Amino acid sequence: MLVDDDRTMLDLLRTLLELEGFEVIPLMPAEAIDLPSKVQAAEPDVILLDVHMKTASGIDLLRRLKTDTQTRGVRILMTSGEDLRESCMAAGADGFLLKPYMPDELIHQIRANGH
Image (cartoon, rainbow, N blue to C red; front, top):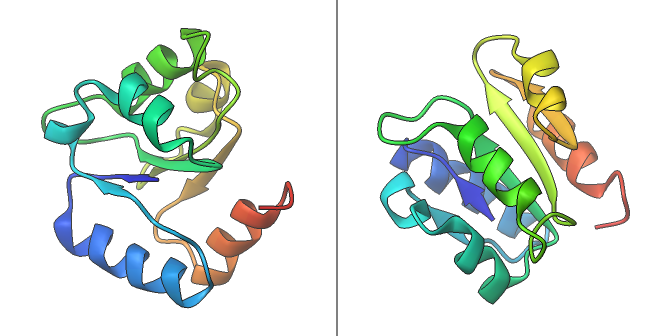
């Protein structure tokens, strides 16, 4: 599952990940308002979540997912153009990618736990 407010980024990541054999569910922040229920319905293996979005805080969404008993076990990789690794990890992230990152780095992070 991809959550980002940049439509171009969503489209590029979706294409890249589908070429690697992943099933991708892209979400814009407006669609992520009720993210826990969307995650429960889709049961993704990994969520790639942007920290800075115009209408939503990725860290707030991360905290909501990690405190919800139905979604706390889903792996969440955070991304940002700022080095917010410590803040994201403290909020419960399972990984962090500093933008711009190489496609191979993303694929490695996703497959790190056998996904």
